Image (tube, rainbow, N blue to C red; front, side):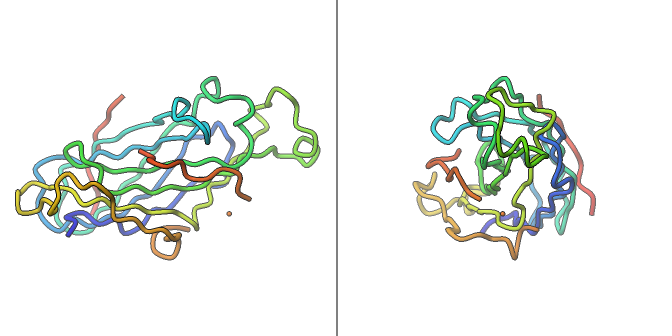
Length: 202
C-alpha cells in the first residue's frame, strides 16, 4: 500500500496564455512519518514523436511531511518555445505532473493541453511562424490519466514483491471524477517517464 495517496489536483489558472505560468493546488494524504521530502515535477511534452523536446518546467521538494492530509501550491514557468518545433506549438500536447520519493516515482498524472490562437482568423489560417503572444492554452483538467507505481518507502517491509517493479499499476481510464476538474491530436507516448523546497500546509 502506498504511504502517500494523491487526493486531488486543481488547475488554478486555466485557460491561460501559452506564456503564463502553470499553477496547481495539490492535495495528498500521508499515512506515516517520512524520513525524506517528496519531489514533485512538471514536464511539458514538446513532441509526440521524440522525447528530446520534453522540458522539465520545474521541480519542487516538499517537506517535512506531517501525517495526515496536506495541501500546497505548485507553480512552474511556461515551456521555452525555442525548444519546441514550430509545427508542434499548436494543437494538443501533454503535461506530466509526477511525484517521487527518494528518487522513486510513485505517481504520474498526465493532462492533455490544447494550444490554439485567440482568434478565429488565426486558427483558420495560422502563420508559418507561430505568434506565441496570441496563443492560448487550455489544460483538459477534467480528464487526467493517472498511473501509480509500487515503490519501497522507508522500511524494507514496504518494498513491493518484485523491487523495483517491472510494470506500474496503471489506471487506463480517465480519473477526472477523483483527481480533476477536453480535440485530440497526440497520444501519450509509451514510457513517459533548479530545485526548490516547500513545507506543506494542513
